[in-house]
Image (cartoon, rainbow over all chains, first blue to last red; front, side):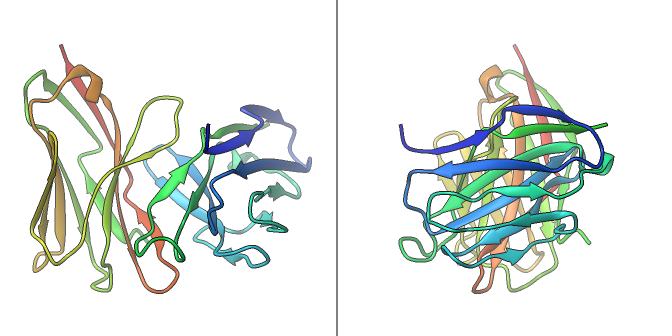
Length: 116
Length: 112
């Protein structure tokens, strides 16, 4: 079934540890995104990539890094986790701009991360 | 700075009622306004979207009303059902990057 997979489903992490959240899509979408979802704040963009080999900063990029070595994978790394990074993280992808004039984004199931 | 303001934060209606969720924006460059639906434990999924050249769009029981002069848009759910209970997010995008800016979400509960 085509879509987006994220791993792990959930994780409890000690503060100061390094963590990589994985995201893979099989829709051959050009654009990919990482969001964090916090109650009352909605979805906030962390980083994005419009195409393989390029990345950009979103609204809340501090403490996070991404890479886009190929079309399918877009990992998110927390170099040294802090409790304020406790959140639910969603990866998304979009066919924009090559196959869509508007940015319909498809979301993965999310990773629930707790930093203690 | 929240560029898309969404209200209410939560909403409870009886089955068959018509919940209305409102969003307002400031950035006049926004030109695409989608609504996403999220069930517990799942990622958001596109529900319906509108462009500013029309004032209303219907898809099944879901309707977006758009008021360009007031910079507001709203989601109406006709004949709401318990299965519509979910969190709803409005969003907007503009510019060459086409990044989405999301509202803060509305948790809808439809009572049987």
